[in-house]
Every structure is written in structure tokens, then in C-alpha cells.
Amino acid sequence: MSGDTARKSYYKHYDYGLGLEYIISKWVPRFVDEANRAGFDGEKLIYLFFVENPSRCFTFKK
Image (tube, rainbow, N blue to C red; front, side):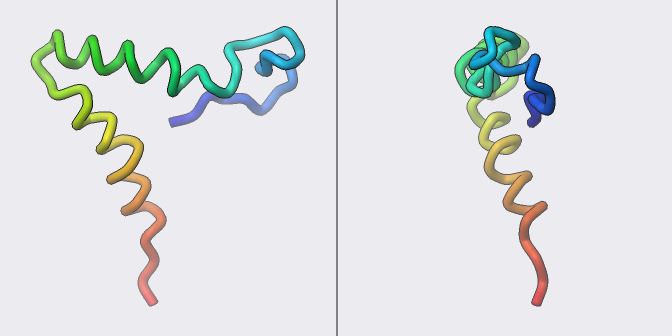
């Protein structure tokens, strides 16, 4: 997940943009709600997106 906050104009601190907390505070609850209404387990999908997938990505073999 990315909030694409690479520019100053994307930060609330400078009176612009959605802010760094947008994904967790706004997007996740909306996604869970919409996924649940579509017949999916929204909480499980969030766990997969934010925990399982990154853990596989950052697992390195020795």
C-alpha cells in the first residue's frame, strides 16, 4: 500500500493533501466495509495486504 506522499503538496502539515494517516484511518475501514458487502472477509484481506504479503516480501534466505 502506498499513499504516494513524495511531494510536499501531499502533506497535511503544509495544508495540502490527505496526510500520512489516510490509508489507515480512511481507506482501510472503507475497504473492509465494501469487501464485506461484496461477500469477502474484509478483515482477512487487510491482514493479507498489510501483514502476510509484506512478511513474504521481506523474508530473505541465508
